[in-house]
Image 1 (cartoon, rainbow, N blue to C red):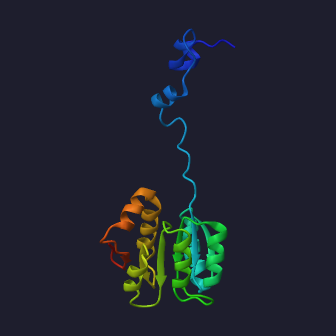
Image 2: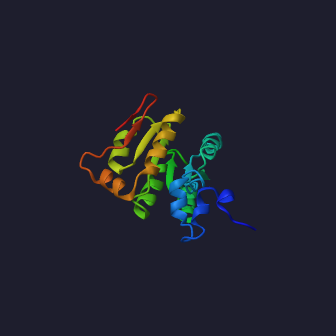
Length: 182
């Protein structure tokens, strides 16, 4: 085969020179190879209501998250230990150990893990502040706001998260129907 500049385009002139450098080719043609897709993050979805697990699980899957579900407090701690999720969505009203018990277990094992409490219990913000939860949303869930907060927390670096959690004025995000309040 004859490798001439006519069938090699801009690179034909290099036949008598050094070999092509992949970095140089990518600089000249940035769209030649697509960026690799980011690794899918795993979310542990803990809620005793099967319809919430089903509906929210489908939404999370449609956003390209891996989803592991749990329906009790005990199952939540077992799944957490087995899976090592990137974020936990945690209901408070669950049999076999409530959400706060599961949170204490999770937080003791992995204090930097983002946790968002999703609950039908009213007035849990003071306790969420005391425990150091990242965010809290009362049901019914506002999915766009919840998804925004999930993505924001998962995008944080370890350093950013550590700085946020150790600030004196740290308070959980209160996710309401209007906006996330920090």
